[in-house]
Amino acid sequence: GTLPAQPIPNPDEIPKGLVVWREAVNRSSTSAQLAMCLYSLESSIAWDKSIMKANCQFCHSGDNEDKLLLCDGCDKGYHTYCFKPKMENIPDGDWYCHECMNKATGERNCIVCGKKIATTGTRLILCEICPRAYHTDCIQPPIHKVPRGKWYCSNCISKKPQKRSVKKNH
Image (cartoon, rainbow, N blue to C red; front, side):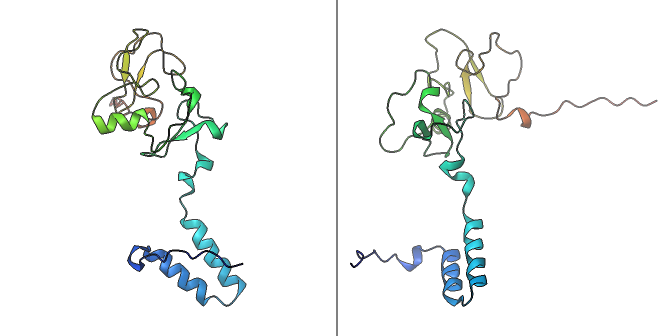
């Protein structure tokens, strides 16, 4: 059987690196040269953006891939059942997480439930560095007292500015 005709891409739309790689493959005359081409191709793939590496931003698990939604804005993963309330269906078309929606709108809504005001009346805590915001009962584990002063989400805690220690001269 014959294969269906593939549309011929416009040469201007093919990335230069791919053109160079294809030329190297065509010039290869040994298995070692082809192996080098394969190594070059594999090392250029952004595996960290792959769904195979995606973990849920809430529970940090990569389990239940069929329930793991990838945001079309940031490529981060979210289990449908980790949202409050749980998402019953995988949305059709493009889907953007509440964090990306916060960035796009300039608003600060809870990234778990998507609301500014919780139905339970709990307070919204805002990360000092990124657009993440959580209700105290939406964040896992829940926070029982609103933190005083600046608060940093689990993603930003490592970026928190360190307090300067005062050195004493003797």
